[in-house]
Amino acid sequence: MLIADNLKNIRVNLNKTQQDMASIINVNRSTYALWETGNNIFPIKRLLLLCDILNLSLDYIFGLIDNNINISGKFDIIKAKSRLQEFRKDNKITQDRLANKLNTTKAVISGYETGRRIIATPFLYTICKKYDISADYLMGRTDNPKYLK
Image 1: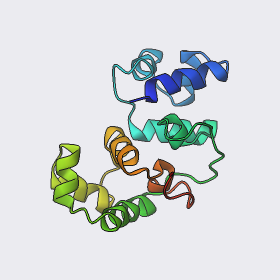
Image 2: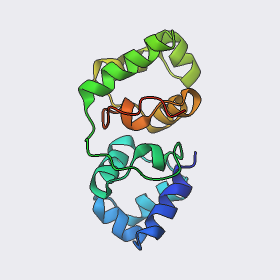
Image 3: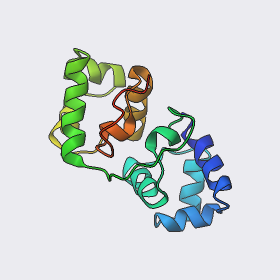
């Protein structure tokens, strides 16, 4: 994933240290450093918090778009769960098939679609990259654009 490289570039462009970024989302610098270097996966809840505070687009962090766009909306679990269902229906993908593509179980996909869980960062990235759908859209942060290409 490009997330690690993009996080570092964003941090450098904002003239912030890893400690600054870690403080923004209330984690240890070493934890943030592991995310920024790609040694650990950035949890979606923390990534969304960072996006909200710094007014960043998930699509930009994921490398799906070249420039940051102003996203005024916040994560919306109600929209997120229905938009994942909508995405599956638009693409005629069953929960089983999506689970297989993501190397997970149908129960996990069901958990995302009922709002019991927030979709994991690598699963969100994979869906968005493969289907050119906006991560900000899927997470309910914006209504447009739905598809990026």
